[in-house]
Image 1 (tube, one colour):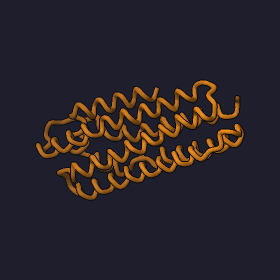
Image 2 (tube, helix red, strand yellow):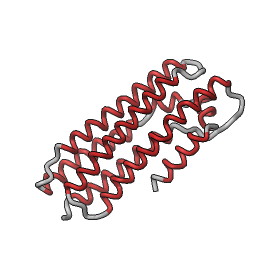
Image 3 (cartoon, helix red, strand yellow):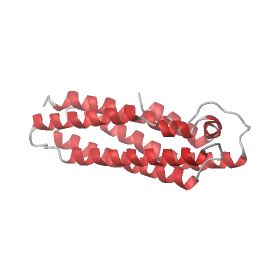
Length: 197
């Protein structure tokens, strides 16, 4: 049964890097001089993003769980497939939430919002493609499966590194301050960092 286990570990490690993306959604500084409009925008986004953050953390945990024991290729494939689908859905929902909230009341807010939505949708598509790749792996042949899984893990690492530049830009300055005051964003940050252990 050897074969897939080291690769699973690599997959799990790459996935926990993905959780960093969501952490971008919660600044730490706080100040009370934000506009009412900005605070309301931040609340809307944070409230919508929090359940998605939980979904991503749970998907990461499921993959790590499956990789911690000697699972069969079929079991690994089933869990990976579901996790990638969940993560893809979560990023899509985040994109929709940011789009729905509209541009934050800051300089270049509209461009920042559009870039973040585009980035979240790109991530959603990328995870959907990973699900397809994972589903197409040959579970009958242990060595082939391990090789295929390696490819998936490599893509995943690239994904978690490509990161969230647009999200980070969206959350600079006053937007980040406003978001850091929202209870749901604080909760999202805590649950994400707890999920990385």
